[in-house]
Image 1 (cartoon, helix red, strand yellow):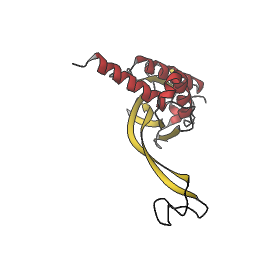
Image 2 (cartoon, rainbow, N blue to C red; image 1 turned 180 degrees about the horizontal axis):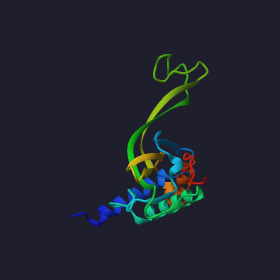
Image 3 (cartoon, rainbow, N blue to C red; image 1 turned 45 degrees about the vertical axis):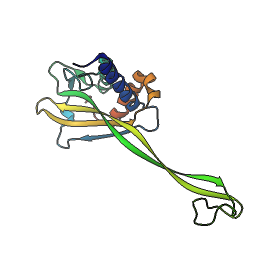
Length: 197
């Protein structure tokens, strides 16, 4: 049986993951999209969500699904699509996290002198006592990705996918709602189609 502490930690970790991912205000947000070249986007007029979005299942908080549903509804409505019980397109949202190691290299000036260091030694420097060395540092990060999928109802095939990727961090958890709306908006900037004639 899953303890309440484990469940709380899982929800907190997911909140951090989503918040970090959706920190669209940060410069680290990367957005991309892909589409089925055979899809007839001009024929789509209606849409709806999967009954349960990928971000709504398991230990996920229902608030994530609510924010995504509201932000996507806004984007689809602005493009002239109507929500329908028998839609042309279904929308799903899923998330994924990847733990990675980020390497940073930077120069580190230091003071030295000929008395204590010689060229080629670990503490080398110029004859004036100034030197520059190179330092590398490894940092563990969590990279989070949100996938917004548009699925053709008739063929049950994925016709378009928008992805937002960023480094997850605690600071963005406070701006979750705005971050979700901004990330969804940035992803849909990659979707050039509308239901308007």
